[in-house]
Amino acid sequence: MVRVFIAGPIQGMEDRQEYRAVIRRILEAKGYEVVDPWEREKVIYRASGGEWWKNVPPRDFIERDLRDVERCDVLIAYLPRLSAGTCMELFYAKLKGKKVVSVIEFEDPSPWITLHSDVVLRSLEELKSYVEGGGLEKLLMDLELTLTSRFKD
Image 1 (cartoon, rainbow, N blue to C red):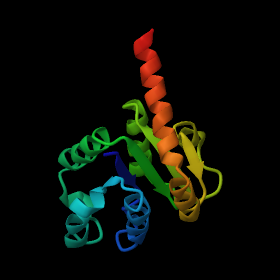
Image 2: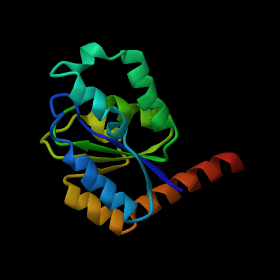
Image 3: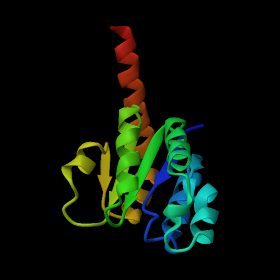
């Protein structure tokens, strides 16, 4: 089964994580397994108050997220605004050879984001159309063809 990691801003948006449920529904409707760090970590954010990151061991926290990225095939980066954590996960996914679909809702995104995205969309509605239309399957087939050709040579 294809695993998809949901990356998106948390810090400063702890009470506005509804987008994750929307992305989850879109992906699960097509049979994808969703890996969402928010499901594991929301207790930490809500229990720790406004500056939760000061009360969490950063290395453990980040390493868990990176391991999740490693065991996924695709990362969907939702960026309604710029997010350092989301950008780091996006870049890490590319370093690990994963496919990245970015949903960028703010104007003038950095070329660092767009260059490291295989697909750039502008809204969750576009993501829904892309997934329902078989976009992720095609993206993964492209990855498989690339890997196959590398091993042939």
